[in-house]
Amino acid sequence: MQMPANPTFQKRDHMFLKKSLLSALLVGVLALSACSSGDDGGDPGGQPGAVPGTSMNLTITPAGGNDVNPATPITVKADHGTLTEVTVTNTAKGKKVSGALSPDKSTWTSSEPLGYGSTYQIDAKASDTNGKPGEQQARITTLTPKQQAEPNLIPAPNAVASTGVGVGQPIVFSFNQPVKDKAAVEKQLSVVSEPAQEGGWYWIDDKNVHYRPKEYWQPGTKLTVTAKVYGVDFGNGVYGAGDRTEKYQVHDSWVAKADGNTEQMQIFHNGQMVKSMPISMGKDATPTHLGPHVISDKHENYVMDSCTYGVCQGQPGYYKSNEKWSQRISNDGEFVHENPNSVGQQGSSNVSHGCINLNDENAKWFYQNLGLGDVVEVTNSGGKELPVWDLYGDWSVPWDKWLAGSALKK
Image 1 (cartoon, helix red, strand yellow):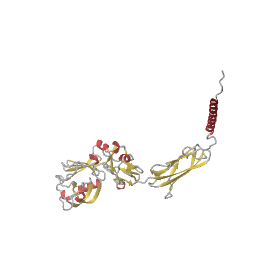
Image 2 (cartoon, helix red, strand yellow):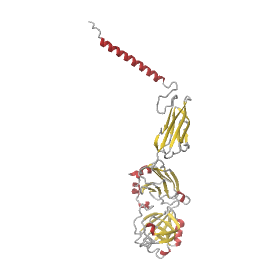
Image 3 (cartoon, helix red, strand yellow):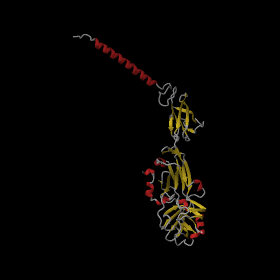
């Protein structure tokens, strides 16, 4: 039996058909659009860096904003196009930043660091594969540090450029601001030796980091020392003030061995003993430190003043005298130098305030043949070991403990 038509069902069927037809039409339009996009070289679809009216993207990195790290290179990249002009300008100074195009002219990269606390306008022009021109712009402002840390080097490279350094010379970066993030800074420091020798960094304190090899440098070694710290965050608002690369040359091996038992100092040149001389080291009240010392400074005439380490005029033990042929071996007042007042005790007893005393002839010879970075090894002095912080007490630290002094080992 045929059922009578239901008006409600008929209405729903009609609406369903209507929606189906609209959906089909919409799918067809989308399919047609997808098939035809890009065929006429038109807009690349609103992608990041898309240039209206062309088939290319122009991408600028960094794209804009504040507190940009000035060490970050600026790059401009043209996808499906060729760069025709890129300018990066310091808006305050009007100075343009140098940069270079890739061989296919699809990428431009800045070749110099930006300045701290500066604003730069970036303008890029290019043509797509069909020759249609387009351009993009961006503006960035670099971060402003609270303080900047200079990578000062010890020894000063110009001070040893003509003489070279001795086999015991540590390389020291002495920053003028404290370093909180030591690991971040140490990653940017390097010492390359030719021939290659094992070495490592050791942080003496928050401002000074030392590098030395496991054993004394080989004579003739060439050292290239680099600090790539510009833009590096030291912590607490401190950033690296600039990069630095310096070269050092290690001269012949000169090692002096001062023995408190024999009261003699033997001098070895490239491993061969060439001279022995009588000495007087520190007396019982002021013994010379034990262990390897490194010559850090030298003067034909030098005023020895105990007040420099706290014993001043009017106090017991105060002295002030001019000494010839003086070479510093620690920061707390130890020198190798001529002392006519102790010649009678040289070779027999220790009477100095911690220095190694010589007669005039031997002191002059020692001064003329040894210099910065050369080693004075002290044994049987009755003193304590030279502290690592006493400028160049580096060699008193066993190698495993030295390596543990690296911020990258913690």
